[in-house]
Image (cartoon, rainbow, N blue to C red):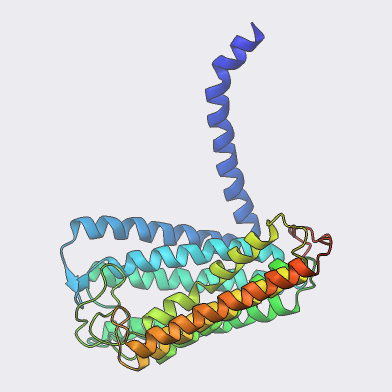
Length: 323
């Protein structure tokens, strides 16, 4: 009888547990940083509105659907917000400064989301738009927020570099990932004002007729997700012969290779070459970059197998313990 009652109530219990898990996750995010949590939900909201706009709003701005940029920014910024919420508890050597990074990032990026939404509703470009006094004012605000956010990101990089290490694999994944993000954001300062837009890759909008610096900018600002994910995967590898030192070296190889890709597509854009129309020089450089990364990785694996050593304890970081 007890088993039958348990079976009868299990579905509702499962749903209740799921709801509690969702609220628990939201509660934890709020405790980590309320401003950053609000921003992440604003980014999610912008993404949803953007998708609806793509379906029902036929307007075209600079050769792209009116809501394409808002949707793309919503996805990208939301991912960054979620990543920063995961990262902040790891930066506990200076909790007040880490809190400032969270609040400042959330506040600045929330303002950017509002500005993007306003211009999308009006059906006009956001970036470099000085066609009217109002547009010029909004772009002026956006320019200030871009510079301010770069400074806040620099503080985050310094925090990660100074953080006491308890897990070297993840520590270097976070440090190198944030450094690439800083470089990726800096590339935005090189971008010239758009002209007539022209044909672009669907949704992304990257030009199919000339070089586009937005490619390197986009790849760079997602370096933290790529390199931190690589570090997490390496932490979970079961091979005892792959020591922590080897795994950290692999994180470095991944980060240098990823940065090489950012440099390569930026160089391609500066040469006036579309991303999807690489010449022989670009393809040869890409092949060299891939080959170098694979050879370096193979060397690490060969060295690890020839000099086996027990994997020393390197516990996963917990909030307040640092990275």
